Each structure stands twice: as structure tokens, then as C-alpha cells.
Length: 136
Image (cartoon, rainbow, N blue to C red; front, side):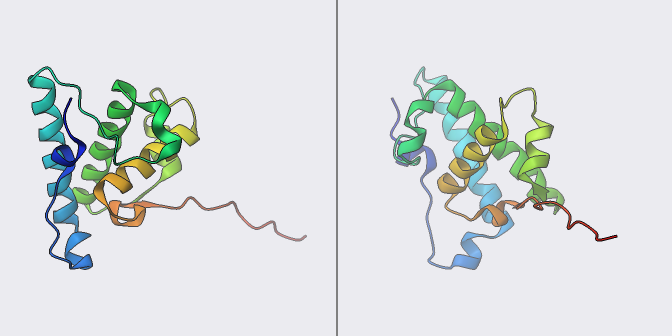
């Protein structure tokens, strides 16, 4: 089994704006995906044990890795195209994969934690809470 720090290791220069730049996030995604593929190629099961919190402990294994890779792929595309998306749009884009919005939101949070960036830096913005009702 691979050590999480080797899967997701990164050097930080201490500059938050550099750390959260689109190029830096894309580079981190590419390194993480490369490390996951390398671990799988060696017959190892990649693990994110130290990078996710207690409530995600039950989601270990291939499902968690698949969710993480799906979100990372979506984030990379958002950043490269200079677009944003709501978590709801992301859920509906992968509606056949995620069983519900909560599962998708947990995967987004996992990726934000792994990349050590806020959701907005990944191009994922909050969904509007609905429209205000008009008084007639």
C-alpha cells in the first residue's frame, strides 16, 4: 500500500496566491493522477487515508479513488477552460455515477482537502438557493 504523502506530496512556497493558482492546481492534479496510476501499475492500492476526515473512512477503496479522479478531471477541465460550475451542475454531469448530491459534495470536499485549496479555487461555486418569490 502506498503512503498518502507520496501520492499527494507537494512543495509549498508559502504563497497562498501561487498555491491556489490555476496552473499550480492543475499541476497538483497531474502529479496525483500520475502517482495513482504508478501505484496501480505496481499492483498497489492507492490510499488517501491521511487526507480525508473521519466521516469518509467508510468510503475507502476503489469507489473513493474513482470519485476523487472524476472530480479532479472535472476540475482540471474547468480550470483549463477558465470556467466555473456549481456542485449541482457537476452532480448532474455525472448523475449516472453519483447516487445523490451528498455523495458528490463529499467527493468535492475530499478533492479540495487533497489539493489544499478552497472549492472556489477549483472553479466550483455554491449553487444558488432559489429565486425570491415575487409578490403579486
